Image (cartoon, rainbow over all chains, first blue to last red; front, side, top):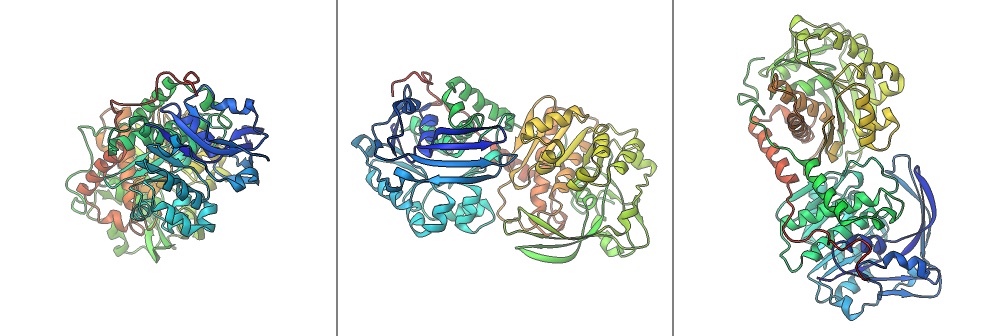
Length: 319
Length: 319
């Protein structure tokens, strides 16, 4: 089934202890589309300026990505510059220039409006809601957001949350949005607002999936060569929704959502291995499948026949 | 087989958003011993002042804890006061009074020297090494440390690391000790220094186990009622080494180390549910076993027959 993503296509300048790039293609919709295209066809809706060349657009070519919805307008692309700390766990935003993105009004083609699965990448929550309302055929709509909207458009964000099926946020955002320390309690709270599925992304520490049925948690992949976390959350979303869209119209079971979380983690972890989309651009399906199975080995344990806590405790045995 | 722990027994004053206690029994050896005693007999070696009453000592009674090695000396117990941030993920030390702990010289009884499994809780690394040298019968010796020793006794700490079998540190300490951002790479580095086993504790995010054979990673338990993280790392160590000591002389397989990591996480997660040792004191074996199995459900996933990445990608399918 078809998958629609609405979000930013941008240029990024990134500095990490592992290198520096001055102008690479970034933006949530870019990372999402490249990652999801390994699983299914993607319609991309976004806006770029006239500095986005045919050469730049090559990033989408040769993939299952339909860029008819990528609007071109006079002006410059959204530009973001950031710098990561020594251990890549903190980042400082150096520059944010919205440029053509400031007046972004998503225009959906008929094909986009008929998508079964939709991902509303991080944009202004009113716009996200407008898109959601136009996608009448969508049976599974996901939403990402960020601290900026939590702070400046809280009511609108909650209104949008109430009309989506899945909410993907990082742990800091989940806490900021709910004021809850416990991610488990916070996710319960958020699920009451509407979305049946809450995914809490924890960066290098993994991700947790909260549904009505259960909690699933997956640790981070033990990367030896992380170089740039930019876009990892969007690549995660691409793997997550790409996998689910590829399965449609199979039912959205708890098992399927767990696998989607693993594929999301696979895509996010690969993404961090290169600057920008560099690593996921040269990824192969067999690498994806291999890492899925590595996650299985990474997390596998079985109770052993001998031992476990003794029966006579607590507070019974002699000191 | 017998288990020895050498470390602090202390009084703590703790403040978190969930409450405040002025004087509860803490110290690494206390948390460790209470947690480990659910699995096996523990010899505790430490020192307390004359302010440590018979009533205080009741915490060890009725458990498989031998306190013959808990020395009493004139003066006051080690005292620590700390305050946790809103989400419990940061803490500020308000007071550290070493008191009788400043001159702690571990004295090992014959029984202690004959322990098969030993945990050197966080004390000065020279002292840890002296204890390790006296425990000639020990086949599995674990070590914990802290940022203070990494900064002020780095060479001694590395010397001690070279004579133990397992190193348990939190992620920040692992990075501080190695200068490596990647915990996988850092653990590889640390294993080259001697210990075959490195456990990286990640607080609410779980723990990772690095052995010569594999990497095992377990997410944190999705607690709804975390109130005080104090001692969670030591309760983790108690579950980890308690389980392994209970299994001895069974071989220390990769599977056993994975189960030990789960039991460590079980004990650490329960510990956080109460102030100080409050929760693990009233824990039962069946609660421990139940949470072990909950970890299994929490992390379970299976590849499904339909979907996964398509075969024809990357960079082949039409855009």
